[in-house]
Amino acid sequence: MSEQLQMAPLKIAVMGAGLIGKSHVERILAERRTVLCAVIDPSDIGRDFAASKGATWHTTFAEAAANERPDGVIIATPNQLHVANAMEVIKAGIPVLVEKPIADDAGAAAMLVDAGERAGVPILVGHHRRHNPMIQAAKRVLEGGRLGKVLTAHGSFWVAKPDDYFDVAWRRRAGAGPTFINLIHDVDLFRYFFGEVESVHAMESNSARDHAVEDTAVVLLRFSSGVLGTLNASDAVASPWSWEMTAGENPAFPRQDQTCYQIGGTGGSLAIPQLALWTNASKPDWLERLVEEHVPFTPADPLAAQLKHFCDVIRGSAEPLVSGREGLATLRVIEAIKSSARSGQTIRLTDADMRRGH
View 1 (cartoon, one colour):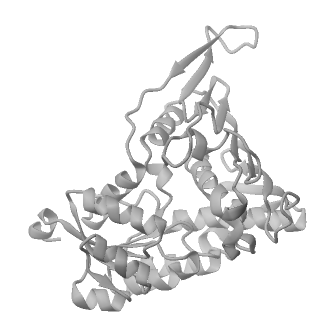
View 2 (cartoon, helix red, strand yellow):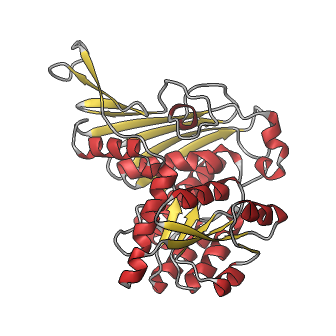
View 3 (cartoon, helix red, strand yellow):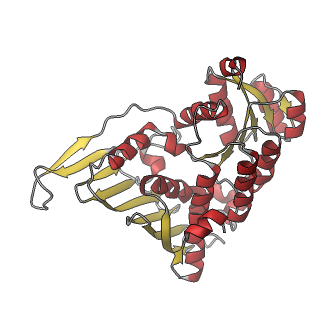
């Protein structure tokens, strides 16, 4: 890439002017290394939002690319459009950041990932929590051996979504529910911490609302590393125990001083998001006094950090932290969870399946 392009602000286009698309636009406008090339959205809402930001508005990617070729594109359209939209961008040879989930099914995601790899075009997936400095600090704790041999982990997603949340019809239908909408974030972070998932066993219930999708799910995970994990999710429980309520990432949620993840090893345990590291005073022994230590980190906006990373990937100075193949692997675990809940059987995820995306 030329020195001129290295020094010039990168031109970023955003496809989709919904809530997350608007969030991406705000970060692009605030980042000194980027300029907003275009807002791409066929709706009047997209047109009006682009005008409010003084941005160029287009109804299609082809129209936008013909007007001014972007250096990178962020796709924040509805899930079912992710693959078609990203394929357009890949065919144009432009790096792309696709919001999570990478696709609405693993087969389509695998086709997209293969297309990107064949074309040599980077695909990033918007599992932005991996970019949170708190998560990066937790990862360093695990890799540094402070917990000894990691044995087990638990994650909670308990929230009370109000009745009017479900006035939007698709939220009551197959493809919605807390597993696909919310738990996918937690599964992705557990994969980041502990490696690939070997098998899952899940149960779910819709007894709170009787919708076509679950309101509650419980998941057992066995990782190839030997770690055993549990995830417990419900969007019908008033509680302080979820990433949304504890991490302080989104100011719309009232922050609670509680945990959402606990990770345990032979040498100690770690509570997230507080990064409270618990160890015995002298040796591991349940009769020994426990000592609490808080791991330091400097908070930062993970969406802004993700954008900076996207800039580095576009310029060729970094490999994607969450590649298309990583997004595919996380989606496959979610599909396995749903399959297990339907069948009552343990679902094994094989290495061959991970490569094929089936």
